[in-house]
Length: 165
Image (cartoon, rainbow, N blue to C red; front, top):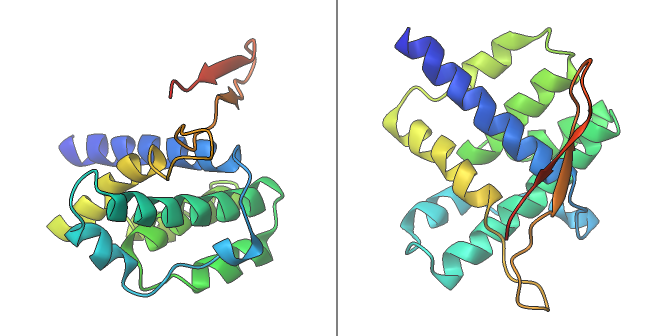
């Protein structure tokens, strides 16, 4: 029961991150990659430091680029982005979800295979929640966040999820 609950929580976080990332425009075409050893730098960064915010911003830009490709159903672009980040734990886990969603939720083996098994993988997984709320301040001094994200609800009235920031 605990394992099923953990997978459900993981899926909820990953879907939330994907929804946030897909609704924010990516900055440049170069955002479809991550620098080497970014996860190690993220782990070593002081919490709430400028260094951590910069690292989180790089992850956010990558997630936006992948999520936009997903929103356009561009499997080739998603695969190109994701193949470039196989060594990054956070990028790998995020890409596993996006690829699973692109398969119309039919190819669950790679997604389930990317679920955290070690303490380090779990830590990386929970970093995604912090990263999705991170990034860096824009020119107005506000955090780079999306204000409204439409949530599709089957058979129900469409709702808008408001992000306070």
